[in-house]
Amino acid sequence: MKHNLDKILEKLLISNTKTIYHYTTTPALFNGILTEKDICLWATNVQYLNDPSEFFGFKIIQFLLEKDYSKENLQEFFKVTADNYFVTSFSKHSDYLPMWSMYGANGTGISLGFDREKIEKNSDSGIANCYYIKNEKILKTVFGVEKIDEIGNFFYPQTSNPSKIEVLSYFTRKILNLFIFIFLAKNQSYKYEKELRLITNLRVFRIEDCNTTEGITNLVTQLTKNPLDLKILEEEKQKIKYRTKNNLIIPYIEHHFPKEALKEIIIGPTNQMDLSEQSIQTYLDHLGYGHVKIKRSEVPYRG
Image 1 (tube, helix red, strand yellow):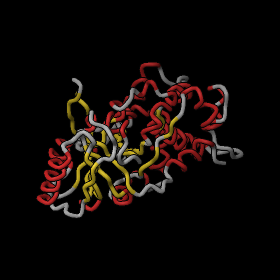
Image 2 (cartoon, rainbow, N blue to C red; image 1 turned 45 degrees about the horizontal axis):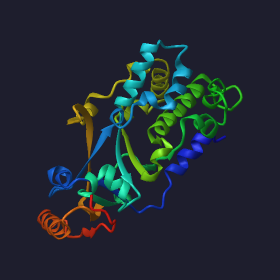
Image 3 (cartoon, rainbow, N blue to C red; image 1 turned 90 degrees about the vertical axis):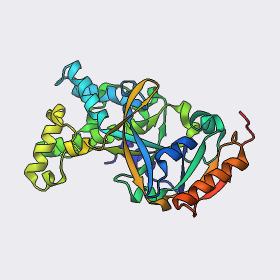
Image 4 (tube, rainbow, N blue to C red; image 1 turned 180 degrees about the vertical axis):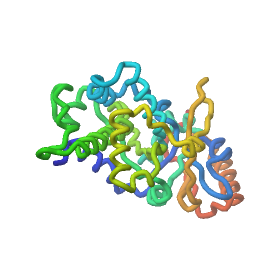
């Protein structure tokens, strides 16, 4: 039986949006997004997008695990999990004043239009729509219950006499789905963004470890009973880089996409249009992006 959360996640993964937009600045475009070889977009660690402790979903996880873990261990569990997730943000809006104000350098930036299919084809995960909801409505809307202590059945298989491994596997899958939902859920106040997210999680186990029933059993048991022992694999840690912003040192990873993934660039409304278009076109030609269309914002805004 599918619960509301499963149905919501399925819908979030379905979209007929063929072109998705990433608002940024011209210096960012020049300093690494576009190269002669490919396109490089950053995925920022989720802890630096929002504070995970504010997410209501973490209260649910805490309720489920608090009998087995101390408050300190739960906080470590949340941090270890959040350390593992990185997000690249896009929008369905190509030319939208609030997006220029928030993410496009108050209109002096640019909006990059990408082919969604090519982005997903060159990623380990799909792109999902964000889900906008008020925290107080999560229990009823997502889990169909009024109180948090009624949520236990959601994480227990609805079959007669399930085996221990079935219970552990089912619980683990639901917990992981909950984490995905947490990183897609946003306050309703941000609904205007129409955000889509490419969520990447660094591996904590090797695929070959799951080739046998014994391997799967050991992994599920470890994840469920000793989650703090599951650390990001050393080879995955090598992907993490760091940058500074607002006096913070922020972890991120790079995603590389083929040149053909970029379809168009919209110039922000407060730019010097003629000169900006000329300079961007010259740079695109220099790097071999002659197929990219350049458009001017139609938003009547001058900063």
